[in-house]
Image 1 (cartoon, rainbow, N blue to C red):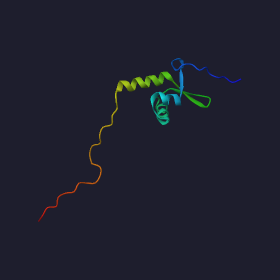
Image 2 (spheres, rainbow, N blue to C red):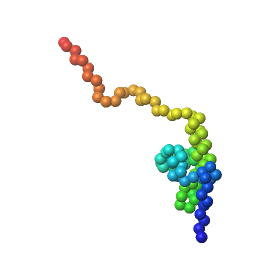
Image 3 (cartoon, rainbow, N blue to C red):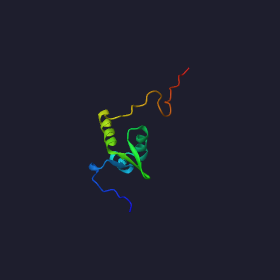
Image 4 (cartoon, one colour):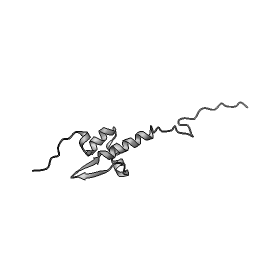
Length: 91
């Protein structure tokens, strides 16, 4: 007989699957794995599946909320697109 974990409410469980972390943070799988690789999420292997601790997910979310919105700044320098016409000077 194999071990089957109990279905506990999310607030009582200590870990989450990658899919649950994706849904919780509205992010892609590549973003979740990047955060694991960067050390922002603590994770471990449970057989074939990767598990992420809820404490690390919540800690990362709190950090992001404290930083506030991270808006990209508009590009500076050269304008994109076709250059504007210059007026011809009559001799």
